Length: 175
Image 1 (cartoon, one colour):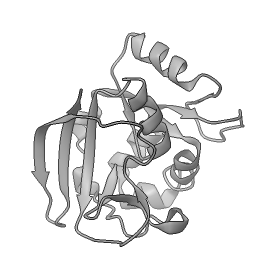
Image 2 (tube, helix red, strand yellow):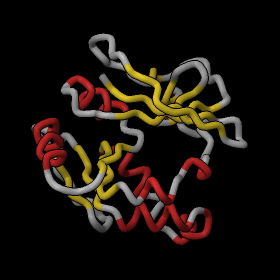
Image 3 (cartoon, rainbow, N blue to C red):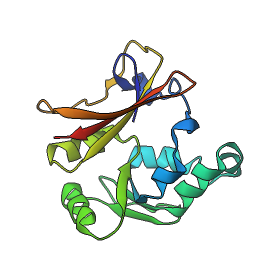
Image 4 (spheres, rainbow, N blue to C red):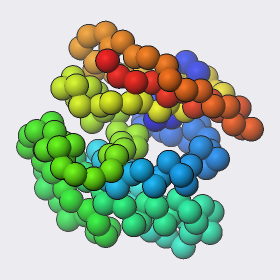
């Protein structure tokens, strides 16, 4: 998750233009531990519009290969035709579907962006770890990172990492 210094994951109008495209945060070693990417529908559409393109291959070839090769599961209020390879759409009981997905053998499942999905899965205790990229910018207003969380969630800081851009990666264990 990208977040501004003042705690927003998006500016009004779903604007993410303030977030650094900090490709330095991508770890090829850590990506080997992932076999599934979980996304909300809006985030999926944004990812689909960039990662399968020649531009993505030029800008960030390792990440483009990762995004295109991994299985993607998209949580959506209604089924839709994904139009990108390796995609499964889930709707209805998303928490139940994610719980089943977590019980299957395999590697890690990561969520990219998708604040509403993340908050709904937090409510169900289905998120084990958060990796939050704090961007060196204040945007003044927007949607809070954990907007909609019904109660306090205690997290334990397990790692920090600073990048040349000024962005800081904070890793927290849930619960």
